[in-house]
Image (cartoon, helix red, strand yellow):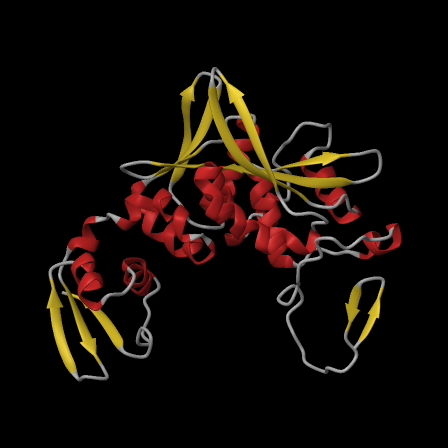
Length: 292
């Protein structure tokens, strides 16, 4: 192992890994302009960034390159650190704690900045061609399940039935472009709904919530799954289920998924995912579930 300019360069391994799966934090390390020009976004991290741009994040620009700016209130700090762990490879410093006072009320938020890099400038040219955020024409390719998950975690609004994505800052033309992707690529039943005359939003029908859950839940932080509440509280989740315990060779019936989860001391979400993914492999090698 050789150390060069504070970056660890490993010569003694022949292991093959997926690009982006082994990225570590580079906080505190100074990059030269030449090194910054060589940085490329791994596909997973790129999708995370696109989801943030579509929702609560933004790309600010200096005279040369763009950087990502992302912040969340302290109420969503778990999700914020979830994001930072994915993006710390592209950050030179740790997040900031921002304290503001307005109308004698104090608010606390967390904020991160990535480095200003050419790879982010490329994204800024797509999303801010005239300095104002838009939905680019190639959004069909850009809106991966990972990006969609982060868009929902940022701008999704929980409803008793269905889900609303708060797209207030976009034009109707841009929102229709997004809806087309949701309908064609993901087969979701959705449409444009005006929250107010100047606030058009995307409404995803309750009939598509189980499908949406299956698409995005693997990439969502558990603290944000409440935004898919209507999928989790679907009446089918309250029907009886049968659990077969392979290790003990026993079969038990429960009145609902909730009841089974409590009795087995496992996460309720895990059973929901088992059904939504039509899983056959036993959960943790021990349990199989069947709806009655």
